[in-house]
Every structure is written in structure tokens, then in C-alpha cells.
Length: 218
Image 1 (cartoon, rainbow, N blue to C red):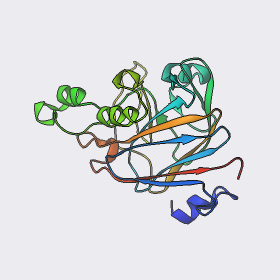
Image 2 (image 1 turned 30 degrees about the horizontal axis):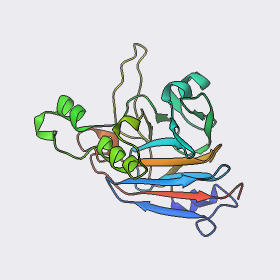
Image 3 (image 1 turned 90 degrees about the vertical axis):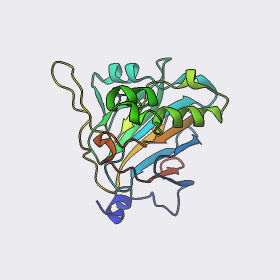
Image 4 (image 1 turned 135 degrees about the horizontal axis):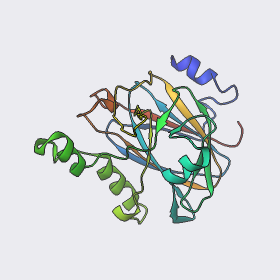
């Protein structure tokens, strides 16, 4: 998908009238605040890039994204257009309003130095991981590693077999694919632009992403 067609999908939303426009480097953490009613777009700029994502209630960080409540609410294992993103208090945090990719994982969690060591060997123990990114970023807001909950993996392809087995395989997102969400409360958005190079979630080549935010129904 080209950048032109990507922007044209939202008639009144353009880069020029965005109230936030962020480029997040490969492997980097990021956070920003969203106001209730704002529209968030996360763009997989180069394709096949997992974007590990968490949401917190901006007024009370103890209320945060819940993968279990989100899956339970829609009776589905994947996240896509129409998904209600739920908190651990059972409240609606955001609604997925657009998705050019098709489905997104919320079961496989974030990579860590510990899981890398178990899965890929001791030689990977000191490689950067999403867990490190999350801890670094939430610490900027007065939180600790205890506040890092199971996350959404936008653009990560994790087929689930009938027997429950999961495997991370080649991503299906193309350059310029995106998701959009409407904030249903004031939110803190926290992202780890996944640095994983040992499985195909990033096509073995982590790349930059883009985050845009618009007011209201622009």
C-alpha cells in the first residue's frame, strides 16, 4: 500500500491536520498521551514490523490494558476493526475503527532477555528486548516493571492451532499498513517498536514506524 492510498482512506484526516506526528526509530520505546475522542493511527511504515503496545488510564495507571478482558469481550483471539480494547477494570479504553492489515496478536506477549535465552540460546541473553523497552518507558511515568501487563502485538502474525498451539510466523503487513483507534478515555500509550531479530515477527530486520493522532472526528 502506498503512502498516498494510506492517507486517502480517511477523507478528513491528513498529516497536515494531525495534532501529533511521531517517527519511532527501529527498536526504540515511545509513549504519549491521548485525550478521550482522539483518533490514534499506528503505521507499519516498512512492513512486517511488530509493534508491542500498552494502554493505561491517564488518570490512574493502575487501570491498564487487559488482553483477557479484550478477548472475552469479543469472543475472539485476534484484534481487528471493531475490537473493543478493554481495561483490567472491565472498562472500554479504545475502539478499533480501521485496520488495513487484517488481524493482530494479543496472546504471545513481549519478548524479554529471559525468553530469548530460553528460546534461542544463551548467546541472545543480552540482546535488547521489548520488556526492556516497556520498563524504560513506563519508568518515565513513575511506574516499574510490575506495571508492565500482557500487551497487544500490532502487525505480528501468530496463528493459533485448534489445539491451542501458537507459532510466530512471517508477518502479513505491507509497507504503509495501519491500524486506527478511537480513545474512549484519556490514555497513556506506550509502545516498544520490537527489536526482535531471532524470529520472523519483524522479518529479521527491525524498522521504524509512525504514530499520528487527530482530534475528534477530523
